[in-house]
Amino acid sequence: MRRWTVSEKPLDVRFRSGRPDGTLDVMDYDQAVDGYKGVQTYKIEKQPLTVKVNGTDRDLDTNRYEIISYTVVKSERDNTPIPGGTAGIIMMEIKTASNYSWAPSTTGYLYYGIRRNISNARLKDSEGDENLSDIKYNEKTHYRTPYIYFDDAPDGVEYKLVKDTDYTLAYSLKKRGDGSVLTGGNDAVTYAGTVSMTVTGKAGTGAAGTGTDMPGYYGVLTGESFPDKLAYEIQAKSINEYDMRYNGVKNTHLFYTFHRKVSSSL
Image (tube, rainbow, N blue to C red; front, top):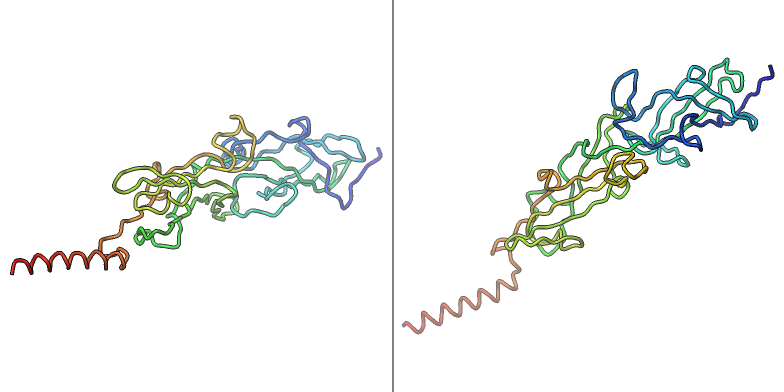
């Protein structure tokens, strides 16, 4: 039997039981269960594969290759690893067995997408330029960013979700006093009152198979649900902290009124 080998170039490989183009449907993190360990993970079990050797498709059964690694990467074109990542594009590196006739001991790469619900993430105190206890109305904006993370990746690295890459962020403010609610723009982080953050995963709001197949982090977190982590107060100023020019005018008027009353009574 004539043997074909592939040297130097990665194996041209695809999933046999996936879509017509050889890719897999995007899976939810909870569905990608590592069977032999019985834990939730972005890893998938071995799949029957197809390799193309000199223009001809050849079967690559699960007993004819080994999985070398799973890596969360930026994209199929950019294989830069994302340490601690647990959703997005997964690159699976394989190597064929030495006795695989069509391409022995040859490395190949496959890609598939994973979605993960941010409601399963952990939260730390939000981050900003000011301490939470020091935020007061001063006619300036008081933006803070949530600290949302996962720490259960196989590589043991904590992954902090990245604003505008993994999620979008919106603010609303319930004003102190009249209770009116401001949304959008700087007003929502300027006035005295309670600021509430809304975090929406860039991959949408639903799990895999619910109308979207975009890999990444999905779901919604709100300040109402997590008031200690996704909401904060902008305190009102005391009378003594108002602008000195305003105080000067006001105090002069009070002094004049008081002096006039005292003088007229003498």
